Amino acid sequence: MALEPLLSDANDQDDHDPRPAASARGSAPEGTPQFLLEQAYALILTAFGQMGYDIHDDNFRDTGPRAAQGLLEMVFPVSTINVGVDELVGKSFSARYDEMVISKANVCFGLCPHHLLPVIYRISIAYLPSKKVLGISKLSRLAKLLSRRPVLQEELTQDLAEVLHTRLQSRGSAAYVEALHLCMAARGSESHEARVVTSAVRGIFREQPATREEFLKLVTTAQTPLL
Ligand SMILES: [Zn+2]
Image (cartoon, rainbow, N blue to C red; front, side):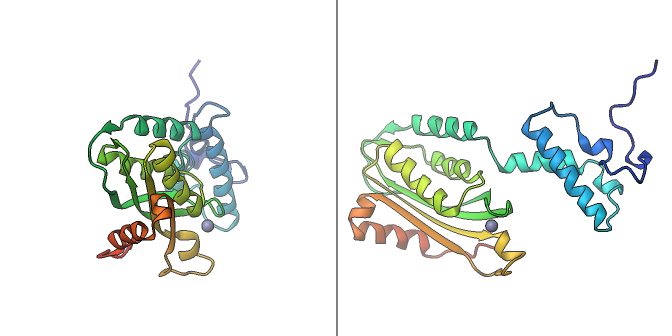
């Protein structure tokens, strides 16, 4: 007996069948995030069909699994983020340097929790070491890791400062985040030029205005436009 092909041709599908093409359903194990997202994208495609688009067009053939995979690249599981932060913070090493360390203008990507639309961040973070410093690339990794969540920019900013102060046991930390929210730029108020700016400070950065000002001056001068 011939085996049924795993993925049938989308064009073979009955036009009146409201379900997405078989090839758009993918083969992820049931109940996994990939599986659930494929189902969600299949429904989105069905809605596009109701809007008059030909969702059996070749271009949509693997859109469900592909879009699900794409979203999973933008939103990491909480466990992945927690383990990643633990690993990054655990890789500090002792140093005599006790001045400000800044990682400036890290471009990162995330998703806003209100519209699930992409946000492009430019993140600058700093800390004042207390005998322990992080490898410089770890600061960039931390910014990228904490961005890949459906999280408010305000909370992301505070989380960055919190990790660099509490987890790293530094004398102080600061985060300065500029962002382009596609939910504001491509829809809604269509504010293409607006950038949302947030900052958070901990420890000495909070207690000493001069330290905070030095940080803000260093991270805001000579910036190229964020898009
Ligand atoms: Zn939004």
